[in-house]
Length: 223
Image: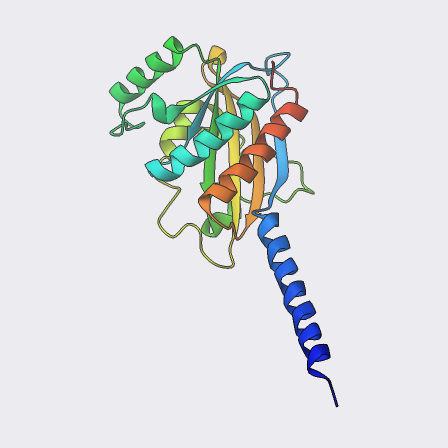
């Protein structure tokens, strides 16, 4: 006959094991994997020091969270980084010429030399995904990707839709770096994959580190 003490001991060990697994999974957080990057050979030698982070979205909450995490991560690398949400008013419309002129003037006055966009695309846009085993180039090489305001205006209302974080979905995300000294020319693009992000906060933190590391490895950040 099994003694009560042995039974309780086994139950305790089983519960402890389950707890350990739960804690491990919680600690893992959201995983972001960079699947491809592209760099223009004409990018500024030595990298960029003053960068504005611009979340491409009309959803102010999501945009603010992503911009804050990415700007903070860049600052840890010695970069002067700011957020577009601090420069663009709530009623900002990138498809209106007057809004673009006003925003451009603010960017210039703030002393930014480059703009780093962040765009989250859900699974419905999977056709734009490029596997890491294939040479990556911004789509469609480069069309409206080629200039900052063209890209920003095209994508502004295409992302951060309600219910973005749902169960069992893979999300493809991209960041583009535009050189303002070259009329907002695209000089770098990176695409990543995220599976079932735990939350917006978790994703923003993980994504910020992956993108910043990729920029650093490509020689695009100057302290």
